[in-house]
Amino acid sequence: MALWPNVTRHTKREKVMNNRYSSKDLPTIRSALLRSTMLAVCLVAPALGAANAAKYVEFDASGGVNTQPQSMSNGVITGFYQSTVYPYYNHGFVRAADGTITEFDVQGALETDPHSINISGSITGYYLEGSSVHGFLRATDGTITSFDAPDGVYGTEAWSINKGGVIAGNYNGSDNHNHGFVRDAKGTITEFDPTNSVATLPLSINNGGTITGPYFGSGVYHGFVRTADGTITEFDPTGSTGTLPYSINGAGTIAGAWADSSNNTHGFVRAADGTITSFDLTQGTIERVDPIMIGNKGQITGTYWDPNLNRDRGFLRSASGTVKTFDAPGSGTTHPYSIDGGAITGWYFDSQVNQHGFLRTP
Image (cartoon, rainbow, N blue to C red; front, side):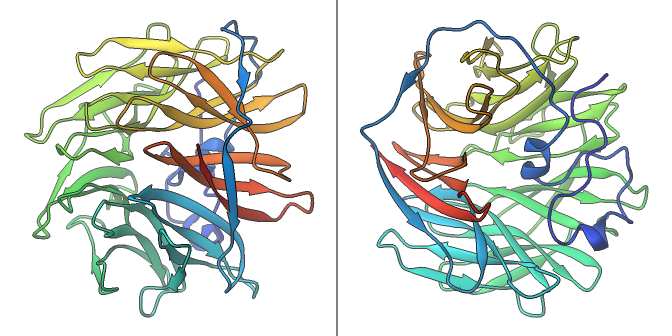
């Protein structure tokens, strides 16, 4: 059984989108991947240390509920929150380093989903207009530019932006499958797929223009890395039956997750030279480990399942492999999503299953 098979969309716009995307396609939001069919696993790893000295700030967008930070750069955070009015669409926000939150939507959009911010404060993501999904770029002055891949007849989704304003994402073509694209700072879009891919999801681009993400081919998920000149290298950790690269840093190091033949799941780090190191977390029996984001110093943050507490918790893994676990104060579950220097942002569920944003600083 392959990892992450046929996962439906986990946003409020799934009512529109589920009828247009092939069941063979990759899920097109990382939170859907986090809620996928990753099964129980017994792992062996160094003992975890608790991280107690950090400071936490909770925050919420004022216009709704269920705040979900997605990306942070230079202390500025972007993400989305949910409307309190049916059908509960998402809306965008940007939180300045001083804590000021500005909410925004693409003009005419039913839903706005920001997913990445660069060091200049430019934000990219996608939005829903009627039954169509389009990419957008929001400049620091609030000006928003909409765009679509040339062959994105069933939708375009932007996932990541680098300091030069280059954007990576996926589009859904006339074949009803996802394909990759890269959009340069002038707006020129290049479409691409790894060899034998039937679904491509570029999730992260670094400042050198190198892109990573998963693709589906030959019945399983594989990782790929695409350099700025268009060269694509496909990869899998040894023994993988499903590979999901989440992010890439400035050195070209990639962090992600992989599954073995028993559907045990593990984290991995892939160096720029192609060397792959697998890592596990242990706290009794671990059912899931999701390394979501890697920083430029090689530190990785993400979520793992703690069966002793029966909930998701956060972790921070240093470049040397030391792991610390953490929970946002008052959280039922904790979901780190982005790291910026030593600061981490993400969201947590409280005891009433409401989502709140958090900022964790050392």
